[in-house]
Length: 448
Figure 1 (cartoon, helix red, strand yellow):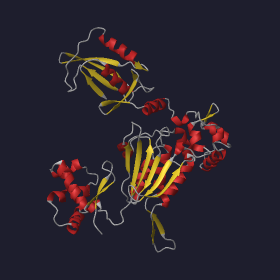
Figure 2 (figure 1 turned 120 degrees about the vertical axis):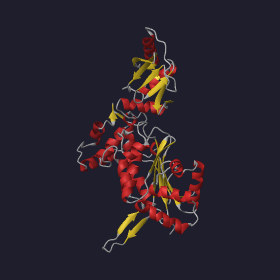
Figure 3 (figure 1 turned 45 degrees about the horizontal axis):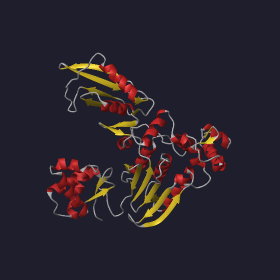
Figure 4 (figure 1 turned 180 degrees about the vertical axis):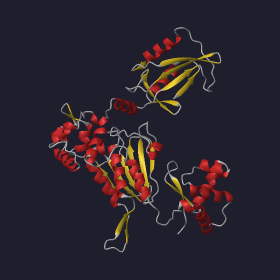
């Protein structure tokens, strides 16, 4: 990461703090924001004075390395910091992080997460000051032991031993994880709102789960499953095949991830909405700032569970295979069933996964024969498409993730005209948008 500054000032220190809280970086002093070397006057003690000021104004103190360059008879000074091991670093009591090429203030939650990650801990490992051992069910703990034994994890023979070995008890106090995993009574901390929607405002069925997080997996899964369609496929064998509207294992995996990775510090509830042709799973807690949606889809990230103790219990009970593999299993199961790609989005202060069912009265045009099929679709549905509209359909048939900007460049028309043509093609039934504007895709369809 690089920043250019014409002179040394507080903005330089802000950038160095943001770099220290992210992946490290360098500030070049004597270069303007157009990357033009203007140079800077430095005396014998100038750079050491800067370093001392940075050290005194940051907490914990950071000491950048410095390097002086001569370019076209102009002096340029580079101040470099590495990613700081104990985060977050503050400047005048404020915390910053680096996103792209800008510094951003960190929220209270981001400050807390950065600290917990730097000491290899998580919120669920901290003592719960509100509840005691009397508030959890030892029978539920024993059930976990039995599941672990079946999974080949002979960790403990009695509830107290399990609680101690997994650090669910600290100084004879329950941790947040212990309470969420094994609480006796329903409580608001784990509320999940469930709804079956006919449309955006018409609710056909509702439920609410407020129990321990282990029990919630089956509760949420059973509610969703109750509202899914199922087909009977006649095979000619004594037993026919049942095909669900969605791959059930993928649905269970989504629910599991939602419960394990939820930010239980948030006052918001988890929400599951089942519609006719999609399901939305919303969860408080965005992706970590080090992981992007693209990283998820490409499986190029290192999993960092928000709730490490809860994740460990689920893993050793056999509910999850390993950290970081769930998203790829979900994607692969939808590919096998030839269903649209699920959508993954950071929304507000949370994260949402949306899955889409196949539309019973629509036919997906196979990509491999797209060019031939497009002509037939156009011929059957409408005979008077413009040349630009035909080209747009052709582009989308070969790349369902094509954006309006990409289409505009390939067709050679303005972005506004592209949007108008896309709207027309949707209106007459040739194109359909699957999922949201960001993260969704196009489908070339043919009316039955």
